[in-house]
Image (cartoon, one colour):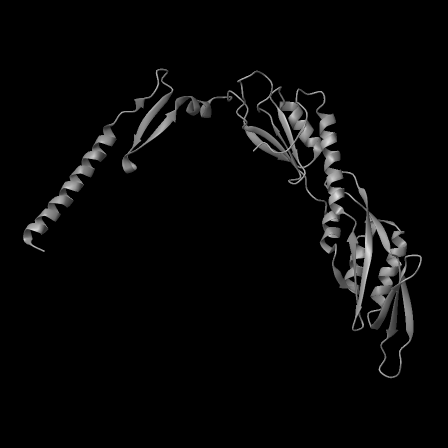
Length: 293
């Protein structure tokens, strides 16, 4: 590189620094510039990067005002009663209520696009959401639904959830569960179903010498539990069909809940109906199936 090239490069750097310094100085002394005749919107230059931002003086004033001009916010509740209470307190003719079974949620847009007047949409930034939560009982039964587990695991599950069982009696199933726990050291040979729907499990006790004693355990074809899918909601009867598998002397047990998705849909529909009734005296319109955003 020639000395002339080097001088040109240095001159360019020096010139660039001077240009930047001039820009910074100009930004520092730049006054805010009004953008409208009402004096609400202003353009303010910020030194870092010589960028501009638009300031809404009306918004800034609201931050320090004793009370804002209108309600905004997003709240979430977990039961229908709380949802009705909050929405009823803030509802207007612009309020829209939406329901989605897939989300297990209802949302009220309290300042939505209601029928107040044509061309007068709401801001849609004040909402209340009912987010339904599964009960521990529903989660417990759903966790083992469709699975086959060792007999002791199944027996412990039945003992832990006896309070949910309505048919046959909890006492009867407790005896069956305790029988499984006491028969840990046996070899299961077969399982077959009787004409009355009962399932018979044949086993042989494990002994060090000779043939062990044979026995049978009868278990029902199915049982019924009463489960509340959602916290704060009613319980629904759900049939559970027992499943068994014998392989290499080991017994696996499980159950399949009959169409739990239908129970969820029914329970959600009952929540929607309860909210609809609870808001019947308020200016909200009918609940819409779907989602607003």
